[in-house]
Length: 371
Image 1 (spheres, rainbow, N blue to C red):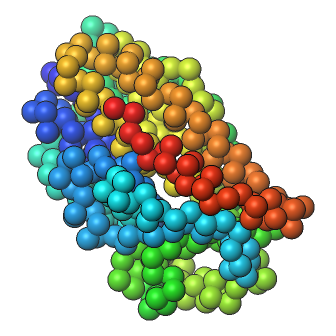
Image 2: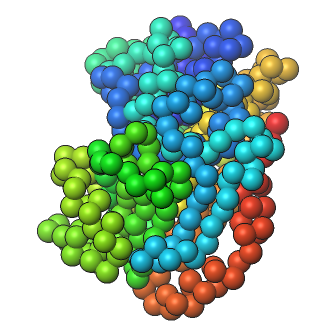
């Protein structure tokens, strides 16, 4: 019999494990993979997540493993600036940096301190509510647990079998993510770039010394199984074509862009969803992982003074929903605008006219923790 079971050893589940350990609360994490290893490619940890990692004593490790981002820059295909958000201005206020890091490096750091609590090769098969929760894994092992956290991602089995909710939305965009070992010009060293074209986008950021992360998106109508990325992005800046050409095929992954339509409830008796299982979002604001980290922090903060987990879950929903739903909706809308196929000049002109102070305020709204 477990007191607390966390299903999923991604960023949300691992962060929750760290905050529970800090409070001397016992738990077990069940991760489907045979090891905590690279999933996806690069990820941004903005100042909201980094404030929490600071409280966990992990900030320095994460900073050392990644690259500090000084600005987030949106450009056209030729790298001409459309919009810029200077995150350096917010660093001194919150005493944290925005970090670009490889997911594998981040998950390694998050798992190191709680490795004795993690069980690998445990892919959940069924979960049932009886007096407690009964969980069966694909290796036929079974456990009973009083409290369950579903941190098992956008296609969460915990959500599907217990809450029976969560409408997955497809944004109609294909996304390639690549990791490239290369010499990175100084001008690209500390900024995250996203280039907006006509029904397509390309973004890139340095992750660590000589490691570059890039992503490329196209509207589904432009996609085919034999698509040539170099040909598709031929009108983009030559540096971008070089990044694509130099990346080995085995270092590129392809996904659909999806999220979950904002849900009314993330919790039920003795069970709570966090991260993508509760509120998967499109990656257009770089907040998917960060919001999972915030979930873990808010749950831990509430549990300091409240020992009834169901009261914690109820308070958690009330505190988190407004901010999370705002980010999900804004990210979805921004992704649609960024992928426009018509009125490109109009779009770029409008975004160029938005004062940087407005971008700063939006960023600060996200960086501010709710507890």
